[in-house]
Amino acid sequence: MPSEPAPINEAARHALEQELTDVHAERATVAATLRESDAEVGDRADEADELQRADDLRRLDDRISVITTRLHQADVAGPPPTDLVGVGSTVTVRFADGTTDTVQIGETAAVLDRTLVTADSPLGRALLGRRAGDTVSFQAPDGPESAVVVSLGESPD
Image 1: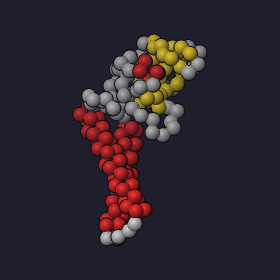
Image 2 (image 1 turned 90 degrees about the vertical axis):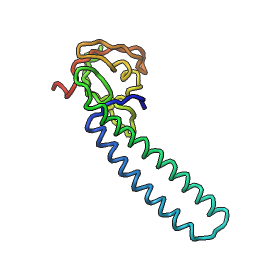
Image 3 (image 1 turned 45 degrees about the vertical axis):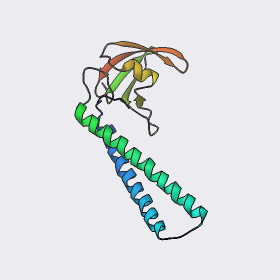
Image 4 (image 1 turned 45 degrees about the horizontal axis):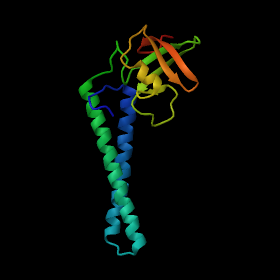
């Protein structure tokens, strides 16, 4: 994740908030099983299971920290820019073959979403900091590509 605060759009904020709720619930479930096992005396398999749950708690705590930090950074950064492409921007691009597509620039692709372009992907990196009317070049799986930024914000349809 970037070290400086970067804005996110409402859909990305909602997804992060939902993930945070889910991770908190999972953590509570794992923590409850650890407390229950404290009273039990078991064998090495029980000890290994307890160590695994403790590792799970650390992983969940780390994810909670990352999400909380990212949401705070987004609050500090304010809304996504409307004149420059940034993380959280919705961008309509026209490719060299004449097709257009509206995508959102995101930090990570946690779910398969064909409208999400990560900021560290070839197209995402090419779009960051650009304005409507700018032409970008990037390396696609089939070779070099170019596209024109048609608009920022909602789809022009």
